[in-house]
Image 1 (tube, rainbow, N blue to C red):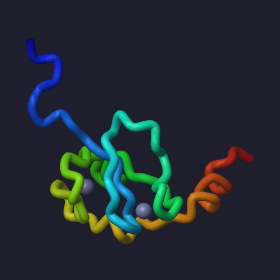
Image 2: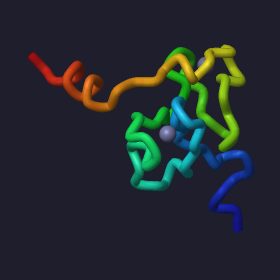
Image 3: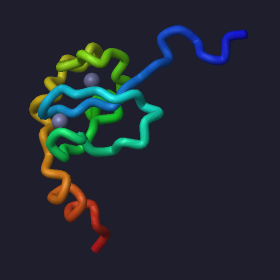
Length: 80
Ligand SMILES: [Zn+2]
Ligand SMILES: [Zn+2]
C-alpha cells in the first residue's frame, strides 16, 4: 500500500530564518519571526521538497529575497 508516493513530501519555508514545516502543518507564518511561509517557488511554482531549501532548485530564485512583513502582505492583499 503506497498512499504516500516517494518524494511527495513538501514543505513551507520561512525565507527569513530558513525554518521549514511540513506542508500538512497548519502553520502559515513562521513561529520564530512571524514571516509569511512560502508554499512553493513564487516564480516557477516548484514545490519545496527539502527542509534545507534556500534557493529554488528549479529556477534558482533565492528565497531570502522574499522576506515579507506579514502585516504588509495582508494589507496589500485586501481587495479595494
Ligand atoms: Zn522564520
Ligand atoms: Zn523557482
